Image 1 (cartoon, rainbow, N blue to C red):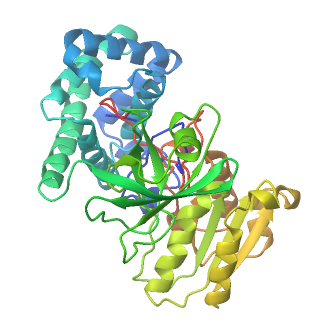
Image 2: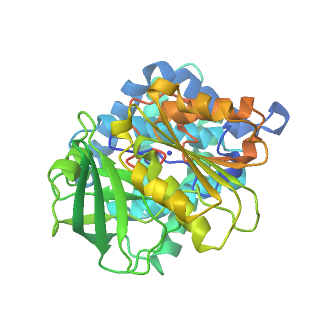
Length: 421
């Protein structure tokens, strides 16, 4: 498995794609509902946590020594990949007893792995290397019972991913080619990139894609769509160049009309439920405003007249690079209110809570991981039910991550032991 944000450029560990009710609070199942296998798996992960870097390095060394033909499927630099492996293991272990959430997560991984060239035959090799690495580093907790639990768990995980990939192959390509048709540099480090795919690209407002550039082969990053599906089929992304961000810097400073990129399948669960008339509370930080804008367009296209409040946060007025677009939407739709928030006014989540009570709203958060984490805490503290808070950061809220947000969407990544460039 490979190891959900806007993601700008550094990370890729997305969250279960269809798990919106559970997206805010990972939390283990209560002890009386925890299976024996889940307890053994989590005990192993707790033991190897202090040596996670060494364990994952050893895992990939075993995999490549035993199956050297798989090395070319992975990026040259493996640091991020090793982090994703651990994120994937932790996320799966966290939800072993929550079958709907775990299944949605694994199915999303299985579909997404098609773009790397992953085949069903690769999964046993990965499983063997994983067991070998765990045997070496889980010296205190490892025994026959634990090994059997891991074998059963990995067999279940891999079969769900294999089945999802096989089903997806019947009606969707592994990846799409997309031509850059326009490149609008909004600030020195933020660009709006518009793409035309070589075939219809089905997605929902609020979802994200994975993207590979010709300048950094086998390195994929997540970016949220900045509009609802358009009649002309064009796709819009907001990209912020971040320090050491190979892909984001290439897209902001190097991409030009005519360049060809590759897109993986759409994913993400930060979508609007049109079966209800609940109002929306949307928090977008930085390029996290991209999927929020898409959600507003989606509400408008469905003819909804429910109240939508958008809080758009940035460091300064200059960094509110898409504020004119949001204010035009506010003038067009009387049910929409846009609230710009800069650092002078305090942190975005705190500003939201100062505006009043939001218990009856469905909340959507998109932006850097720290902002999303603070936003979730603030909204829950203000009485918003957890099952009404949506974002694509399930795995990351339970851990720390060195990566930045996805350009435009709630940064997210999709963990995996298999290639996730």
